[in-house]
Image (cartoon, one colour):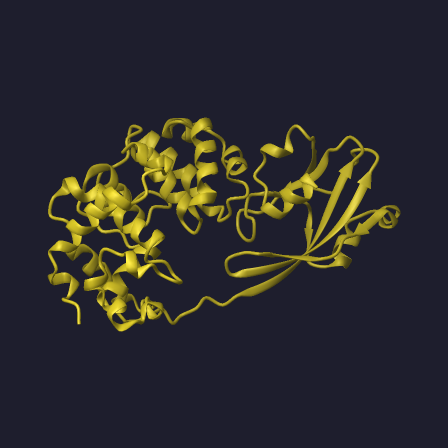
Length: 347
């Protein structure tokens, strides 16, 4: 059986050395220790793959090169740039956080985990990442990659759905940190890199891992059993009927969604719970002009949206009800739009 990780002083040194030689060094947010850039990348990387984030990250920095620039923008503009990245509450928290940093912290991010956690959208792991990567603080991150690495290394088979067990894993993560603060940025990046490139969810590359001799899961041949999390969030389904109206000049009828619920605060076609409700919203002479496309499913994290789209070609920009307006082809691309709505508009 491998020696217990907590009793292996070489762990942090091995990880730092491995990251310097084999870790990722081409990520755009690694080029500086600017808290604004690290914070932006950390928020975007929540629930989103690196390959997707790169394009959005560059686009955001070109439009908002500083936290002050982001704080001065309207929420609609931020949501417009975020459109297609998903999890739109992140964009709202991003905007609110930028405003607080600009107006209450003099445009400077706090340098401690505790202070960072007081800002909107920054949880314990994100705060630790900023504190360690930018300020060299001895703070442990515990995102999905790190949970996988540590539970496999330790053979930590406790259910992480239980708060006490996750707290215990936090303590393990803190115990194995390097003693020198100067090593913290490389160590933290190394933890993320190890989980993302070698200690992957399926088919981990144990033969190339610098920790295989002290990894309990590798010794047991049970890497796929870690981490353990029994509580699964239940999936649900929702049916939506969309009225996609476009006039002869290309303008489309859109309305802003409520601040809560699916696609909160984003711009969409009018949405109805049923075909009957959609028809009832229109004058009867327009009913014969509707064309119903085949339904399709748009998958959210915990919900499947069954979308029925009624296409309506209009000659003029007549009103189609309260709460909406016509948006020209030069205007709607800049709005915050859910991915399926943007796809409809681009078709």
